Image (cartoon, rainbow, N blue to C red; front, side, top):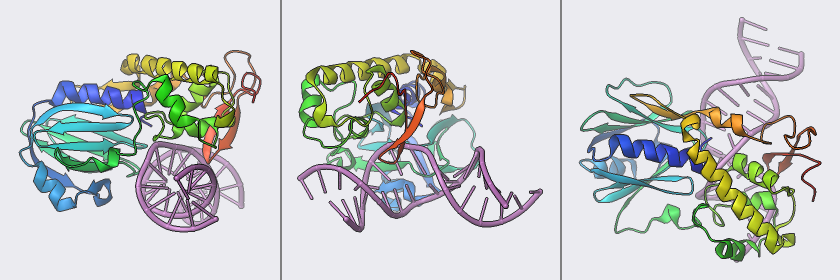
Length: 266
DNA sequence: TTTTTTTCCTGACAGC
DNA sequence: TGCTGTCAGGAAAAAA
């Protein structure tokens, strides 16, 4: 599932491949992907818009067009393919016809979302989104976090506090800090916040650098591949790489959470 | 107001 | 083999 590093990599590939292309037509095969505005407005407004560039906030991928911005969230399984010729395949939901080639949005579970805003509009779907995990400062993070009454794991997944961390990287960050995912945020010390934010930035940056291994680029298409799983230390692992203990799997607010019971004490 | 639960979806996998 | 049931998961919406 794409988290911040995967979205960043997709952004970079799209930037290099379809910047300056003009959208000639949009086809939609699953209406629920389009959250704003209406399906017809979405299709009409996009016609003849040039793709000026790309941006990203947390896990939101942002297309900057001539007059609009398109905010795309890939959720669990959303991916983009760039093709020269197009033939519809399973789970293709949105097809952008470009002046040269096609951009195809494919999403098995149909969880992904798109919002289209005129540049003069308020970007409502981004309003609750906090600063990006790579941009936020220690003070900003601490200030927002400290009043929370839930657990450390929930904090890292809360996009209104820090944006871009998903279930997998949350486990990795917490493991690296040798903290327990169920530790209450109210009991975190200043030093813990420092450790957490440092680990966050380090792990996410390394994952972006390794973008080549997590993302497969073909001459005509691109998709997020599950290969970054090879680099994980705890998430979906069996044995702790530090002490050799058996990795434990628990549920923290409905999310599968992996930890080493020996290295990560409350 | 803040936190928890439900909802959206499909494919993978377990058990019969 | 084929059916049914369960699970996974990001974040909005509804409920507590």
